[in-house]
Structure formats: C-alpha cells, structure tokens
Image (cartoon, rainbow, N blue to C red):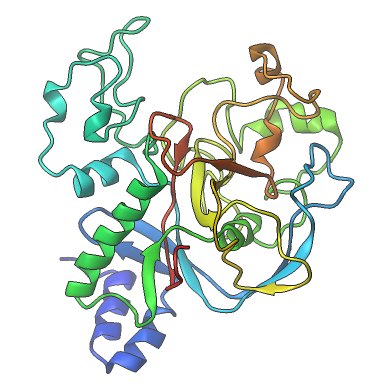
Length: 325
C-alpha cells in the first residue's frame, strides 16, 4: 500500500499507548472508515450563535437565537452517506443487478432513486445511482448503520476512547454547517437581497431544487470546513428529538428528553421558493429559487419510523458518546 499522510498518521496513532492514541487520532484532520470509504473532517470545538435573527427572511418561530458551545472536537462526514456505502454495510451481497421493480424492494432497504430511469417510469436496465445519497431510510436504520461501524471499528481498535459513530446532534450539525458564517447560508453572497438569492449564481453552489431527485454527493462547492451538501440534496437525520430550544446558553445540547418526531436538517432537492406565502407548495414556486428550508438555521421534523420518503438521508459523525434519548 502506497504511504499517504493519512496512513502515516494513523499508524503513528496506533503505535502509542491508548490515552496518547486518543489524543493523536483527534489531531488527524482527515479520517476514513475502512471498507466503506466513509470520509470525515475534524471539526474543532468552539462557540456560535444557534438559530436565526428575527429579521432573517423565511425565519420560523422555532429558530430562537441562543449561544451554544461545542466543547470537544469531533469528526463529521464530508458527504451524506451514499447508497453504495449503505448497501455495502447493511445489505452485503445484495444482487443489485437483478433488481427489476419500479418502486424498488423497499422492504429490503433500497432507496427510491435506486436506478436511473429509462423512460417515464421504467427503471429496468437503468444505471445504479450508487453515489446518490441514501434515502428512504428511517432514523432507526441510520442509527443501525452507525452501530455496525462502531462494532467493526471497536474490534479493530480504531475507536477513540469515549467516541462513537452516530448521528450528529442538532447543535453539532448547525455548528458544522455554518463553519463560522452567521448569515442565512454557509457561503456568504456578495449581495444579500432576495433577487440575488434567487439567481443562478447563488443556487449553483447549493441545491438544484428544480431537479426533482437527488444528485451525486459532492458535486457542488463545500463550505469553509470542507463539508459538502449541507444545503440541499436530502434532509439529514439528527440525533435529537424535535422541541423548543433551551433558554439561555447551552453546552453540548442534545435536545429534549422525549418527543414524537426527530430533527432533520439541511433541506432537500425539492421545496418552495424563498419568501413564498405560507402554505404555498406549488411546483411553480420550486422553479423560482431556493427552498427556505435550505437555510443554516432552518429546522424540520419527521417521524423516526418514516421509511418511504426519498427526501431524507443522513450524515455520520465520530463524536463523544451521548445517549440517544
């Protein structure tokens, strides 16, 4: 195997005592899960203002601003988990080539946008969309994916002490999405007026809401911390139950103790244009611009049991172990 900076750093980390190894691993900027090629970036601790100001266009009442501190470093997936990564880990040996059903064998765990279409609804012989984000996945299936990684990495001795692979908390997600920015989106435009937000120059780095389907991960510009598709493509499950934000400052918040729906962040490939009247969900609005749910502060919630929903995927973090309430 040809030496790389990552391999050298990993070998160096694994050749020292356990306590020192943990510190060393958390100094490596780029991390990778062997076997499924899951790439992650180191996110340093810090504080930020979570939520949005009352003057932000398309703001909702559940985005009350408050100061949040992320006290420990963590790694976050550079990309949303792809179909290939999910299938390789969760459905090893699955016969993808013999798949012939228009809606997909959802009971087996495959995505809706599993093959490219040939004709209006005919998928037979269509190309596999392996670099599309995994979708039609419940919150529980996303957690099982993380658990399988933990089991393998723990056996291999590559799991830092006190750290696990899991879904990001809502605070970790927004902190990583913003990457130090404070505006509506994580790449600050030269202009901030509504017409500029609707323009192709601004939409291109983010989400093509007119596509009507996901696209390969990593096709657009990353944020300042090297993370792709934090705005758009598919919603991403978070660890937290959905509920009101805590009052006052918070350190490493993990959401309410109980709830009915789980948080999802980042918006998706399908949505309504900014500044559209409440409740307007027509396709005409989709073509006008970006969805208000693509904003850094925007929150959404879904039942953790929902499974046939091609707008929800997930992203993995290697972060301090916390209880999934």
